[in-house]
Image (cartoon, rainbow, N blue to C red; front, side):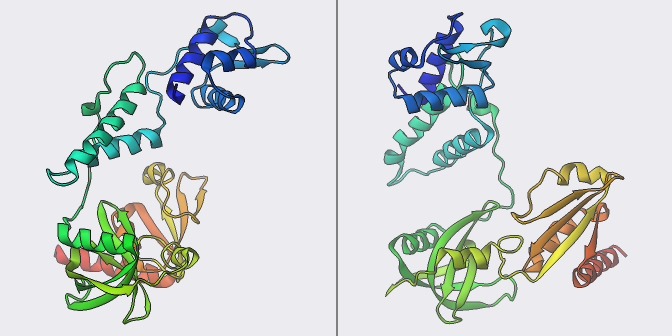
Length: 321
């Protein structure tokens, strides 16, 4: 019996009883250990909101509402449902080939989990959910496979990289550290062997990849976090500044629920405006995020970021005459 089945069985037992049921009797009926029983009880009470009371010396019983509690029609939390639907959608995109036959049972298991998470045993209506991907760029299959293989097998790799910032193409030798899927695009964090530093490469800009004989250099996880997780966005590094942004009340109702960075500071102002302080390193991605809010946001500090925003807005206005 799996966890979902035990939750359903526990609910059925408690719904049919008017007196407390001892932990021992519940363990026997559910065929589980005491620790498993407590996990199921916790999920039913804390996650699904069941009015489940523990009567000292007697056992467990549905309290308020006289046991008229009903399980929700969908048992998954937001993160669980999002993960399952994303897996189903990604597996469905696999083209006929080597993996198709091997992945078919996996997709079947995902669909089975979705079906069991719905009350009544009816098939999960996956067609009523949409996963929209924006601004994604296609990555050539050979490039993706070569880089992914190098990451997994811990080998160095060389490739031609066409940088968007300069428009120039250069040969790079790197020790790949990890693949990153960010805003519907694939990147690889790697140690650039020629520049002797950590860099992030967009996989759609990688051409002519070649596996090298040398073992990839391993960068400690703490160093990766410091290099890529300190500031805002993907292309981060050591914090170079802290952006203080003030949003107008109309926009504040949206931004207040967003998470821009793990170390952000947020303040609701008495007049309805909202202030957000975000550490940043590379400014370009943060600048793009700020500009998409137009007149609904004001950059308060640092002064150099204020000037950058003013310059971009001035140039945008000039483009319209």
